[in-house]
Amino acid sequence: MDALEPYRTASPKPEKELLPYLQYSGDKTFDINLEVFLKPEGGEENSISKSNFKHLYWNMSQQLAHHTVNGCPVISGDMMASGTISGASEDSFGSMLELTWSGSKPLKLKDGSERKFIEDNDTVIMRGFCQNGNSRIGFGEVSTKLLPVYQPKKK
Image (cartoon, rainbow, N blue to C red; front, side, top):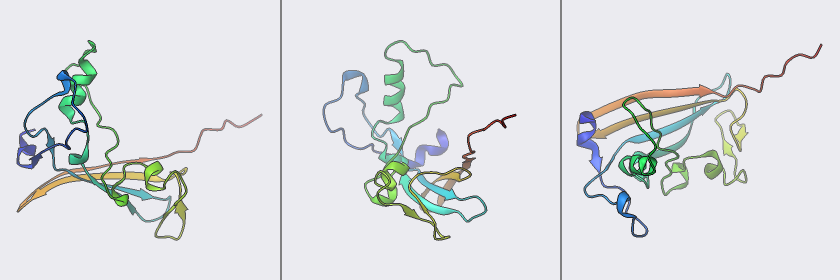
């Protein structure tokens, strides 16, 4: 968390008054650039979304408060996920459903193929980094390949 301090920034303004346990003061989110790539099997990476962690409507402090307000235990080492982070522009949407307008506007890939949704054997790659002035920190990447459903052979 100390490494993220230079990248601390304001959260989006709430659209309506927050419940008391979700209220906060100060800057509670971070300026983290996020990019998502789709790589078809045997093909090239295609950048499909560029967003930023600062667009997250519910900051992580609020998410933790909401998760635990009813008594759900959280212990050191538990991993929390932010969920989908969509920006305001079409190229910053955070899901294939949004990016393709529910499949009505397929994404065009470098090889000429299209995607309405992630297909079997596609690999999704996510990368993130913070940068301001001469300072930059990276988070590496996470990737996963969507495998086809296992079909046992019939005898």
